[in-house]
Length: 153
Image: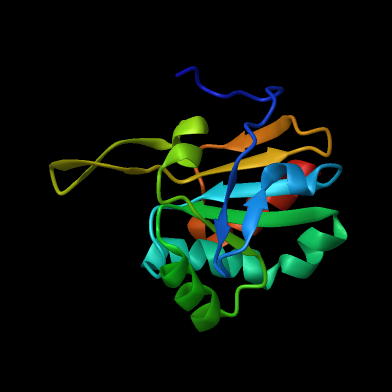
């Protein structure tokens, strides 16, 4: 699969959110979207990243952004994660890995010398026209929302 780059049309998707509601990227047409991919609910880095977006949710919304988090965890896991950390945005359950594959964030990872397949942490900023404006490859989990705001300056 070809790697997505800035200027490309963001692949549309439809999957369930934490409430079992079907959500498509096209539902957000005409809006700026922060689409962030993360490996696993309720792990230290992923929690820090989600809480950074939560803590700056109002400033990001004031800039016209909607936030969507995507992982391969199921709806039940997302529901617990949202509830535990009062996350005010949508989390998508990508159980069949179609979205992570479409965005090129599913691949080989390594931990303690052991190789396995998983989601690479990456953030896509999608313009109101549905095109990718920016891609953050090296996400700072503690300051993920600030990284986005800094790119807008």
